[in-house]
Amino acid sequence: MLEVSDAVKIFHRGTVNERPALNGLSLKLESGDFTAVIGSNGAGKSTLLNAIAGDISIDSGSVVVDGNDLTSAPTHRRAKWVARVFQDPLGGTAGTMTIEENLALAALRGQSHSLSLGLNAQRRDYYRELLATLGLGLEERLTSKVELLSGGQRQSLALIMAIITEPAVLLLDEHCAALDPKTAGIVMDSTIKAVEAAGLTTVMVTHNMQHAIDYGNRLIMLEAGQLKLSMDGDEKASLDVESLVERFHITDDKILLS
Amino acid sequence: MMEVFNNFYNLVPVTFAQSLIYALVAAGIMIPFRILNFPDLTSEGSFPLGGSLCAALLMAGFNPYSATLLAVCGAFVAGCCTALIHLKLKINTLLAGILVMTMLFSVNLRVMGKSNVALFSVDNLLEKVWVGSSTDLASMIIMFVIMVVVIGLILFWFFKTEIGMSMRAVGANLKMASAQGINTWAYTIVGLGIANALNGLAGAVLVQQQGYADVNMGLGILIDGLAAVIIGETLLGRHEVWRQVAAPFLGSVVYYQLISLGLAAGLEPSDIKLATGIFVLITLGLPVLRGGTAETLKLRE
Image 1 (cartoon, rainbow over the protein chains, first blue to last red):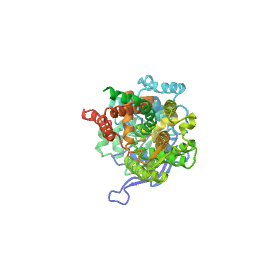
Image 2: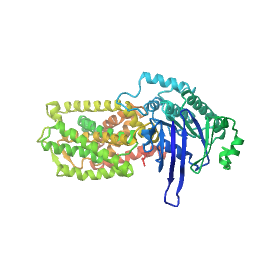
Image 3: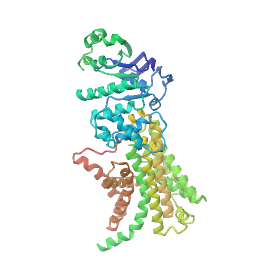
Image 4: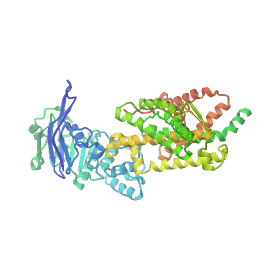
């Protein structure tokens, strides 16, 4: 369960550039909720994810995951509960390390690290099994450097790394936006499969209206750092792009075009 | 020509012995530059710090083991300071290293009380370990080979452990590392500490091997070490952990023999630093001039 309460984040406070990114935003996700987040640029989508992940600290309000108050915890301490796939395929993986090393680091997320070897036969078998679910052949390339992979392969690996610990909250930060449409489709399919199999509580930021409609059981729209509209259940299920545009009074062309 | 060769040949063993000590410096430079992606110049100060501390403690009556160990600890702290200055005060990595290295010059003078100290009157590590004379070149070489091989194997094993892999991730991708629950600050601080502890160990062993400590012993050591790392990487590559770890050791052995050859061929000792600097410039700069991608020394901001 994820609960963000009265979150306020104001950038450049007290200067002419003062900009409220989160303006008293509250959001509650039950376990297993898959929420798509839409909104125009500057609406606070990224700030919301950063506030949940710990990359920025909010000025006031709270972030609670499974009863743990993480409001003032740094990113690395939140990693026990919160996993994330970044928009940039280079962001979520260590390029100069091998596929198996990246997976080992991800699998150790939230545990204490020891001076025993990071890889062994048992762990490798497990990673092979996980990678095979992607159907990209990565299970044959455990010892390849991640920098040799294509963007789509790298993002698929980042996805596996994010879900390997079955995190309490999974954050998807426009994770298909930097990929070509075909690859984006493949990565999105893997995402949905993995999230549904594990029943992960997920927050997915997207610019893609169709994705926002097709996936997840909830849809929220942010505007000026606040929750503008929220719909779930049957209401969301019967949604199409046109009615979405109408309901949300979307005037930002960027959202429609992407 | 024959004379040049003979001069060089006669010096091969003693050059080899010293290059094994300097291999520890090269390893202490490789770790921040290559593993942590934190170009650290502290070695110019932590190497003589290890030497000065060791010399002062030996003169104060400490036994060689505890003097060496304390020297290593002192250098560890120096490395941690550089990391903290960068992390806490947001000072550029290179500047943080220059600050610590400069301050250490005064510290080293304070520690020794004067600019150089002769150690011929006290027991040293080499005699203790071998219960023999420190001038016995063969046993000295065996001792140094064992020391270097053990440290190399420990480093190789360490970078394969969960903790060592996390340290590599910090250098590879800071954002990814913290997202995987890795405390990037702690690993940077400890990593720089370990690297400079190696520099300090080299300084402590060197003063005991040569029988004196000099406050200027660190001058140019960073470029020497960097040249050794680059030579090692050219010979071995760096795409596997064992190659990256072995590179500074092999590179140091080759580099100091090359210097020795240069001296035997008539190169003035005072011109060595210029020659080394030009070598480093060429190896770092040539790929850029050829239009390839620059293997630049990245800065962490």
